[in-house]
Amino acid sequence: MREVVFPYGKEKIAHKFCDEELVGVLTSQIEDYVPEADGHFLVKQALENPVGSPRLCELAKGKKNIVIIASDHTRPVPSQIIMPAMLAEIRKGNPEAKITILIATGCHRGTTKEELRAKFGETIVRDETIHVHDCDERDTLIHIGTLPSGGECEINKLAMEADLLVAEGFIEPHFFAGFSGGRKSVLPGIAGRSTVLANHCSEFIADDHARTGILEQNPIHEDMLWAAEKAKLAFIVNVVLNAEKEVIYAVAGDAQKAHKKGTDFLSGLCGAKAALADVVISTNGGYPLDQNVYQAVKGMTAAEATVKKNGVIIMLAASGDGVGGDHFYPQLADEADITKTMDLFLNRKRGETVPDQWQTQILLRILMHASVIYISEMPDDVIEKMHLIPAHSIDEALEKARMLLGKKDITITAIPDGVSVMVQA
Image (cartoon, rainbow, N blue to C red; front, top):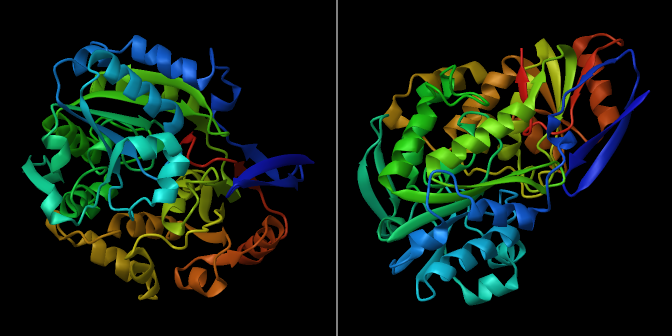
């Protein structure tokens, strides 16, 4: 018997598997990586040794209006470590600078005051100017040009009015942008909804290069890179986290060069060879990434890469915040035939993308390959209407998987954190 521990919400679920059933446990080497120091020191060290750029304190000199793009409540970025260090570095070079923290919500709901306090701590929320981006607030957006995709690029005008635009964030494998972090702070982070829709069109989502760990020839990444350059994103501080959400690596400096250094580091740790199985169990790494069904699609893509055709994916995601994505649920629930919905999406042109279509498209792709049993706190009827099979424990899910497969003896692959690995054939 082998015990595997799966993150679930703010807790962990342990399960023992028979040796003859368990054919693989896919993890990244991040968990074996021993950092040189704690997160505070790593961030400080990165700020003192920027990649391809002067120090942030030097860039801040003479600037009157500085904007720091920060991630929102759906990302486990350790802002209580990064933000104080960035603020101190800026004020070291320019004590009089006006600083605005701009929360990159993308198309997510707005971050609440309580979530801001949890993210930054009471002192920063009380003492700093914080603006939460709203992709639909037309008065706050400004047109900056046409994306390589052909879509019109609009971003928050606070960013374009800044003398210096910088960002914090974290780097992890991303299921269609290749990697998170870097340029993604601008698009989709502080972009208008129509810009995000153009970038996330069905053509790009279906592109074979729009996959985990791929940047070269990735059309989604190319749009994002263009937007960050046009917005003059000058400096980033990005970190890499382990499963405990602890900083194990930090990089700072030029938005492209520092991000490349970070993705190179991560690529060396995150690859995991596929272990083809009848059943693959995955997670979204626990809280905060498993707050809703919408985000949980990310962890499913890791399982998709190593489950047999017509196999079963078991996805653990607490989903305490519900379904997520205003249009995600009806896109799935309103049509019984998933092939019709997929055909509808694929026939839409770049300028015809509707909100949440990309996430639905990826989930439909997964469902055309394998059944998905979803372990969560969600009501069963809601999960069923989304073409998923509800369950509330691993034992229950495995029993349902055996029934779906029509056999008692099955092979199982476990992926304790589906967003931290890049499954390779």
